[in-house]
Structure formats: structure tokens, C-alpha cells
Image (cartoon, rainbow, N blue to C red; front, side, top):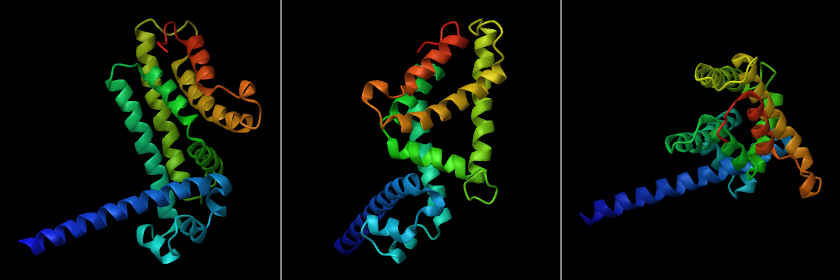
Length: 211
């Protein structure tokens, strides 16, 4: 029995160590992709950042495309978990959206990698092209559905088209991230307030946005 316990404990520790190293690689990749883009990043450089060999990194992620996919999945998992928790706690979708933007303002590397990849991935041969090509229609459709509900409840301002507003919200959020990154070079008082600007737009289209 003691041999089995020892073996099981050893495997558990090994799995935990492997998960921790995988997370470390993901965080290093986020920084690298944000700094130099997907094509400019090197797996060897990412491996060096976490203190492992190139073959050691390939044990976790066999290709750079696989690492990129994992980075995007990781970002979505974190964002969706926080967003869904806010909604489950009784916040409106728009309030949860503003809170998501506030959290992004504390995660510069994540914003850098997302904005950089979104621009790179317009090329159809980019490994993240399908991710972004699918993401935008899904995100817009979800916002459109919520804006339709707001219109039915009489909370959408007169003349606002739900479809146009849904696309505008997504465009605003993505554009604000780019402007925010550039504004970080300026004094704090002059930096872009992403959450504040999003709130201001929601006030323009909703009678009571609840944010």
C-alpha cells in the first residue's frame, strides 16, 4: 500500500509541476507575442525566458501555432470566467463589460498581445486568423441580442440601431485598447480611460445602462 501511495503522490506532484510550467510558458508567450508579434517571437527565446530547453518547451507545446492557440484559449478562459461571474452575481451584461475593460487596464501584456495579433491575423494564412474571424461575429451577435432585449424593454434610445450599436461597441473596445497602449507614454492624467469612455458611449445609446 505504501508503494502505491508513494507512486500516486509522485505522479500528482509531477502533474502539478507540469501544469505550473505550462502556465509559466503561457505567461512568457503572452509577453513575447505582445512585444514582437507572433511571427517575431521565437520558441527558443520563450523557452529561455522560463529557464527550460527548446525541446522542453516542445514537450508542452509541439509547435508555435499550438502555443498561440493555447494563449488565446487562456485569455478567453480568464475573461469569460470573470464576465460570467459578474453576470451570475446580478450585474448587467454592460456592467460586466465595463468591469472587463477595467481588468484589462491592469493586464498590459494581455492587451498588447491581443491588439497585435488582431492586426496580424487579418492575413488568411496567419494561425490566429480563424480565431479572430469567428470571434467578431459571435461577439457582435451576443451584444446585438442584448441590445434587442434592451430595445424591447424601452431602454434603447430613439434612433439607435441594435446591429450598428453592437458593432460600434466592439470597435470602440478594440480601438480604445490601442489608444490606451499609446497613452501609457504620457502622464497619468492624460492617459485614455477605457472604462470611462465605454461608459460614456453606453450612456449615449441606453436610457439606463446600469454602469
